[in-house]
Image 1 (tube, rainbow, N blue to C red):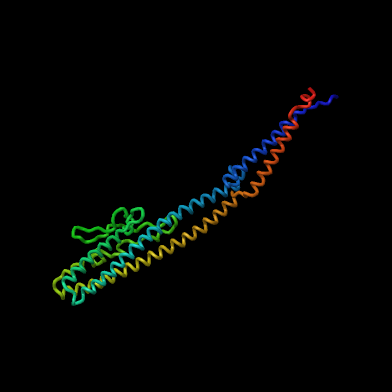
Image 2: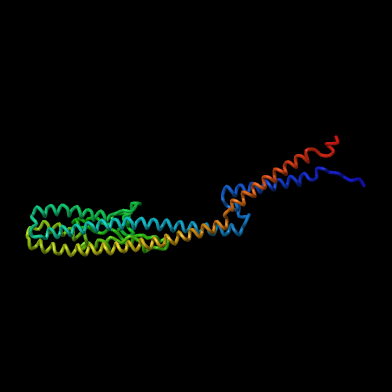
Length: 302
């Protein structure tokens, strides 16, 4: 029987081989560009599923950290505000002691009164401190409006309600700014009432009555100072807890990042070496294909 010679038979095989090499090179180039070991889940379903779970964990940790950052910022504002109010009460106490001195003249008391009025406004500004989003720190959950405002008689009343928000998204709801009454007391015997009483005592013309009122004011200022110290301690404890949670989240995020790198991370060195090897292989295959199949045997025989 005659032997059939078909010099074109290997052409599809060689072309398919080169196409596979080119496809692999394209995938490697995409992996190197993205830094990920697979570009579609079908390439490694198990690794893709693990990467998806880790990505969700990473998103959750990021949301928790944002909540912690917001609460930390609010407590830092609160710490500064209470420190300012504390300084104001310390100065008010010094002025009260000066006014209690029997040698203080009416003019001295007028000068002291003017400074006390400035200090009262300073305490009010501290009580109505806002966070970086414009929310009033010490108004509890009703933080869209001022924490303190004067009534028709000029008495300073707390306008808030409930407790201020904490970092509930990170399960740290207790690390929140104290409510106004915890820091400044109530309307009848709190810090503002005490400062109002001090102003009235400085204007009292009768020495005996004035001395009695100033003694009561000193006691009220001591109580107000103690409230602020307790509040500042609570704020410090809240900041410490938030810092501890931030450290925990930072460690967890590092673990997740390492897990993602293991599940979907690309070995750049191995990928680049393979890509270079495939480029050489493809180049050699193309040259061989061109030289061998430039024409068929019958084409050459004419």
